[in-house]
Length: 423
Image (cartoon, rainbow, N blue to C red; front, side, top):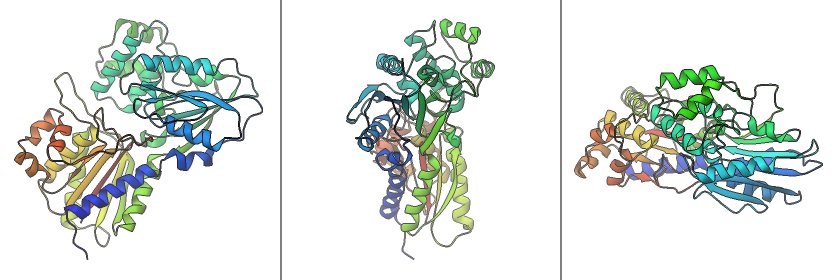
């Protein structure tokens, strides 16, 4: 059996991570999910970190169809999309361009007929990128809501429930605005369980959440919300429910498919893949500690497989900042720092974790790598890894030892990809 070392393990983990990302490339997958062209007009709208790449793939696939439209993506994620206009806006906290994008998208679907079609290109990140505050709210109010949610520790599902009830475009309202035109939604999932109503807060999907659950979320997390927001929640206007809109939803990429692609690459590398699930949630530091425990047990007692193995998982963990100061980092680097601290330098275990969109939080790295000597090298570099974990400064800790994974924007988004190699 070939001996595993840091260089070989890191190369294998990078290949596994990029195989997962590549499997969700819109240029490869979108054309297989297109409907028949409409009799009338075809208007393309969309929002998300992958929306520009999706628009480019659609424009290329439908060169024979008369299409027009506008989509919004994150700053730095735009690519030319032919006849479809691309707008860039801020993520994870919206800005003026997020509001302008929503205005333009709503205008694009006005006045359509039953012979017309709207193709909605929706991917993760769309919640912040396409913002139309509920009546009585300002953009500043919406930004305050996003900041409060991001710091609260709420799950992505809970965040989206709140966002939908404070919007004129989310929670099915975009599809409602497009009536009587047929709406076909092409989705790239970045949410646990691939619930289409959760992706980018479901602008074209009926909303199963209700105002009472939103009020409970606000109370439970003690969210400090502007007065205008509280008035909207007190008024209690509901989002469109099942039966209010017609849905044609097509999932073109998802975390489960990305993990299978990662598993296929692992087999090529001589590893036995074990997929633990694509919907893991919880505090990043807690999930890191649990996964370290699983890896240690597998390393010491053996796995029910022959030879080296890799544990694969996806989903979206949470970093609760609270009201204290925080350093630089994201959920993947925080997960890995906790994992490394719990492993305590155990031999023969390596790991990678990264956001498939190429940006972990708001920094320039997708994630990072862990080797058996990660913690020792951090201390040699003058970093206190435990204090870095407490202060949510994981990016700085991994940068100090040169183990950040920097891909740049990948133009897709199927949530986080985590792999632990047991050699």
